[in-house]
Image (cartoon, rainbow, N blue to C red):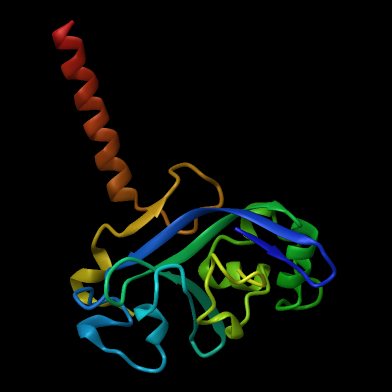
Length: 183
């Protein structure tokens, strides 16, 4: 991801964590049950359209519409690659005076932190990633579906799925044992 500021500075980062929302069938999605409202209309637009919304009435989150009716992908975490000093300044504007200096991995390791750090505004809603040069509670069983993706071991990841990692580790061990038996 790259955002160019008005004075020419670029903020760059690598997306290291996302979460998929599958549209109408996904009860954790804003478009659950096929709900098509003013708030979520962006989820029904062409894939690549940015969907910005408020959580808790004060923080912003950024999704990108994807393939499928009402489907989108939440950008959960980003690894900062350039412009970190400006990113720190943007995040510090939301903190108390005298707050600790944020480590690089703490700059964008949460959906709302990502929006603060990259100066993502509500006005970005409905813009398209490919064509716009300026941009860039529990829900039952759907909250636990394996639709959360991240780079395992990356320090910028905000939420780990320890059960999935243990399961993957166990299956890797089993595979290694089977390989030893065949040799």
